[in-house]
Length: 126
Image (cartoon, rainbow, N blue to C red; front, side, top):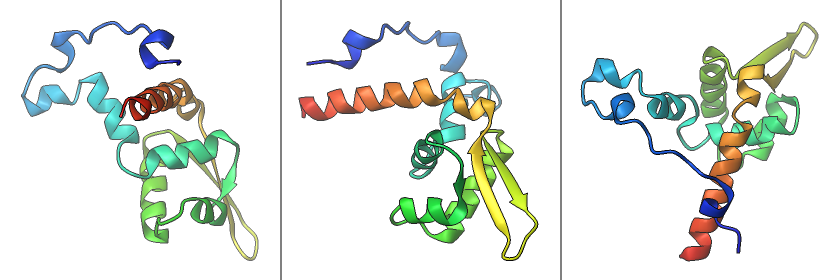
């Protein structure tokens, strides 16, 4: 059985990075910055879809069962604001909008891969 600990060796987080309880200092915590960028129910699932290539809004909406159009729009805007997603608008009738990952967004692939392995190991232990 492959486990997360067999696959990855992680160093402990430096206490100075995230141990403070002051809000202004918490903004510099790398773990919190990561969670801020990909946290929530939908962003990781959106990333998963976009790792497979460029998608139109309707394709994303159909593939993410249970997400409303309003929530998908909000999540995509946040991810675009954070530099993870590129939005390409084609001026045609009807309008065509495509979403793809930026270079920064693509760097999250190993993070999600590690989350997948950890989750798989966790579910096997339950």
